[in-house]
Image 1: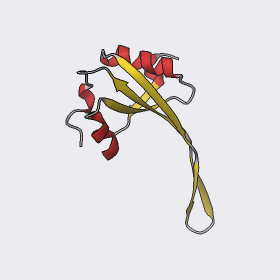
Image 2: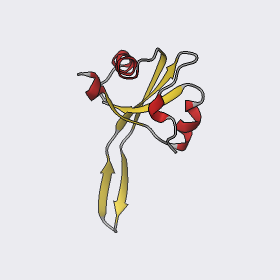
Image 3: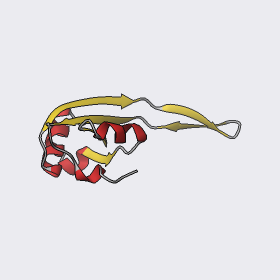
Length: 96
């Protein structure tokens, strides 16, 4: 798995914007990606030093459309990356 397959997209939410001030950034990643692969991908793509990687898998959820139609949102994996002191990722700056 290469670095472009590991990181799917940045996680842009109100909470993640607050965390960017604390040097923490969120990404939706491939479900098979390990913490070391995520760390390598972020370091090589954004040229920063990663101190810590936390991951979690969001479980699939069922919902209803109309009366009897049951839909299922797929599960996905999130990663929160903490950067070294004084570093930031410019992609997240100015996004609201």
